[in-house]
Length: 267
Ligand code: SF4
Image 1 (spheres, rainbow, N blue to C red):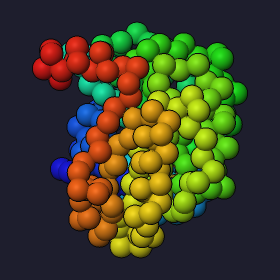
Image 2 (image 1 turned 45 degrees about the vertical axis):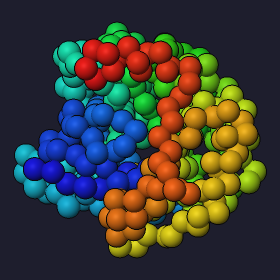
Image 3 (image 1 turned 30 degrees about the vertical axis):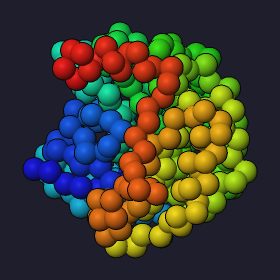
């Protein structure tokens, strides 16, 4: 069974149960959800599909989302990346936020221990809780295959990039999706990669072409890899992902060699 949806970062495709699902997100290969459920922190969360999706199954006995979008730890899923023999880019917690205030610090450390150990994969950890990320980062085992990013939807939240800059990860990235306004005041110093995209779904808030072009031009000027994921629309693919006559699918430069290596082994 498959279902399309958005975590507020854009539309994703998950298989049920969502324990190690292939992903339709253009910038990743798979999702791993050792935590599910979350709560809203900023306007980018307003139409969180993860919530809509999970709440559909609230009360369904035995379903992975029987508890709806209530936060739930899944320790039995922790070991999964150790079992996956084929290298993947793994989006960590597509159905939650690892740095949610109700996730115990010890559990976050356990997730990082697994990521550090299962090092044939690349992990993409994305959060809106930049304060907690920055606070815990010195206690976590960073390695070149663990990327970390923050979501920034409008100019009020560019301070998340300042907090991200304090984290000593090999790759720091920004997800500007759903982009809800111009990010003229975003400083890209110390940022390796930026993903931009518009919102999708019935209640989408349309993105302006000028906001996307502005981000692309900022990335070009700063030497930051730029990935344009979607214009958005009724569905994630409805508007396509063409910007000024071409696709923008750049990946972070510091790991280009590693990506080539993974491709050579049939990634
Ligand atoms: S932080 Fe992400 S997963 Fe949590 S409510 Fe917001 S959009 Fe949804």
